[in-house]
Length: 163
Image (tube, rainbow, N blue to C red; front, top):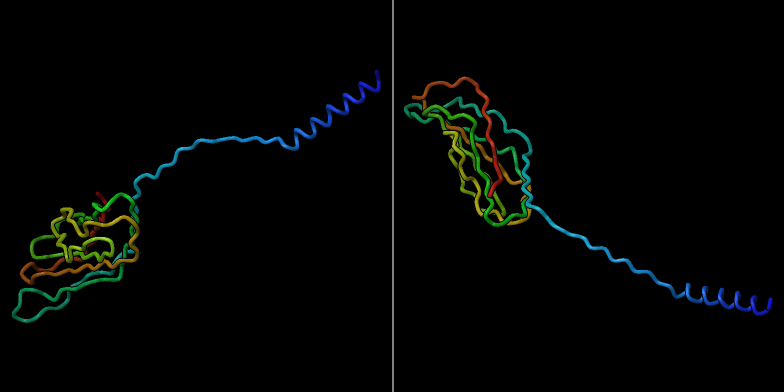
């Protein structure tokens, strides 16, 4: 009886070892993936001062000044209807004009856009999906002699990437 029991125990252990050598476990996980709308925009800093200090005798239009030392970069995955608007914080008095020109490799730049009246204006339209890096920003400031002098004043321009 002991021999039979020993054979059964050894036989059972052999079967367990053989079965575990071929054992396999699978686990399946389900997950959900999504990518939301991404709108990112950054500028390289602030432009320099735009100070008009000369003109031509006999001409009301003084010599305009420009600054093209800053750039912007964007990333967007929303669609080809994205645009950039520009808005000056407070309107300039009559006789003073501030324009902004945003270069673009992914959309259509509208050239020099007058933002003097503090209304949001389209600057770049039809921006395609993807990224557009280090595109130039050019500000131009002009004035009429008949508008008089303008004390140094700080202004803010808000660029908005929107659909």
